[in-house]
Length: 330
Ligand SMILES: O=C(CNCc1ccccc1)Nc1scc(-c2ccccc2)c1C(=O)NCc1ccccc1
Image (tube, helix red, strand yellow):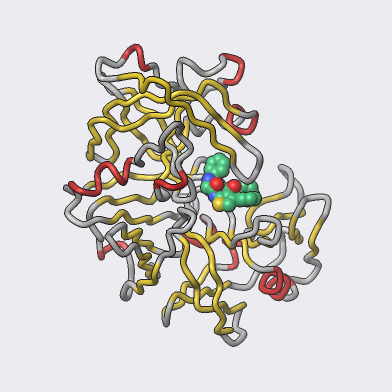
């Protein structure tokens, strides 16, 4: 089998991208954040503390004839922004892009932190990282990708994210009409469970490309691009008036600034991120100070090729016995 699901940015800053996911019988459709940087499928639910639900769609297991409680199983996730959620585990039928996992572990939230409550556009996450990152106890549960991979024509899913418009995630097929030129594949290190790869270097604007190994993760769930201090400083040195603001917790500049393109290497291929993608958004609504889409990864401890980078490319997440990432321009 193969399938495709449209994915749309949740707001004009492309803060996150959601997909419709059908859960249960009859289908309950929730808008989930497909997240290659984590491995829990968790949802707002009828079990979520009422005061922590604010406009999200919820999954009600008791209304599904195919739901089953996984006795004794619990889960708890915590992300880098200190956001958290936790709860219990059911299995149920889950369909994405026409592909069904008949007994998918659905992690039902009993509690979520404030940043999830305040984001009414996201009803939960569907993790597409490796199972080692899954938080369920006493034992990890497989991701949706892991459950369907054996039925896919090809053991892959692809990401075609776009700026301010709908893109798509495809499963089991590589649609060559979605990219230009050819795909360049790089090896993935699955420890500790991210889609971790080594970029071959970077270029800033029209300056010479710098060949250097940059280890990072391909993370659809992280909004921005986070790289080493030296690269980030070199980039903003070309933006007059840019500064690394303690107030705003990162690099900021005048919203009227013209930002150079940023190129990153994948093998011998080069992916160009338009400078406009790095003019991420005003620090507060209406401000003339803008927050950069390229930020420093020092405090994170890992480089993250988030949506700012991914939306400049067509990316193949190849889950074969030798996992790898394919990159192409588009
Ligand atoms: O956690 C992820 C992927 N999930 C992102 C996500 C989605 C919805 C809601 C919350 C988070 N990616 C990774 S790998 C490593 C980190 C990290 C980031 C900062 C400090 C320590 C670890 C993150 C992560 O938390 N990404 C989201 C994020 C939030 C704030 C700042 C940067 C990145």
